[in-house]
Amino acid sequence: NKVWMTKLPFFSKLNYQKEMTKFTYILSLFVSSGYALIDAVDIILLSIEHPVLKDKILHVKNRMLEGESLASALVKENVYDQGYGALLMAADQRGDQDEVLKTLSNRYKEDLERMLSSFLNRLEPSMIAGLSLLVGFVLISIMLPLMNVLIWIGLSNINKSTENLDIERVKNSLDTALISCYSVEGHYPENIQYLKKYYGFTYDINSYFITYDWQGDNIYPNIYVYRKGNE
Image (spheres, rainbow, N blue to C red):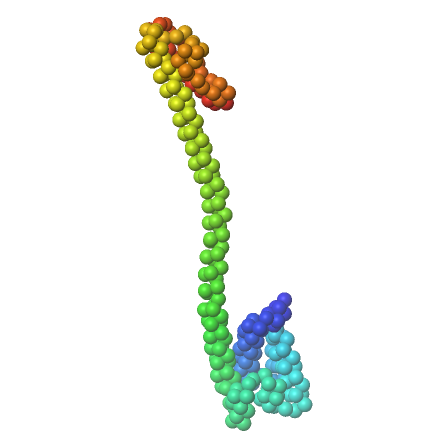
């Protein structure tokens, strides 16, 4: 169903031009072959799809049935414009309608090609713009989730680095207390509580867990500091 093409201004004009090209070409073949013109018009009507042109040709057929010539009927029904109509009327008098119809067919074909070329030239920038928008949308739809993942990874690394720094800070504080104790008393304490009581060592027991493996008075203890929840 191509009725919709007759509703849109440009496509209606393009479709009409296409149908006129087809009509003129087929008519030129029938005229040059000496085919009965009334029968030729009947056959051509079967191939015409544009409703406006089809209606004009029906009226042409009726005029021919009333005794008018083909050229006269075509001109009176405005199938061709004034210039082309004058050529047909002159050809009818000279008896070379087939040649004139072939010429008109070529002109309609050239006009149709120009219309299509002009349409495509106007359409090309719109297509490029549309494709650019589509590509941009696809890239954004891909990049946004990727950006979210990268941000999440970055924040995770920052949090991890901060945790490591905090753990290192607690361990350094414990090392300082141990060295101070050994320097003053000549031995390492058996537990952390001794360092907390006499050497000012403190840490957040709600956030960190410390293992203190005492090896002896003169052996540096094995110390491990963990952040709670990451043991």
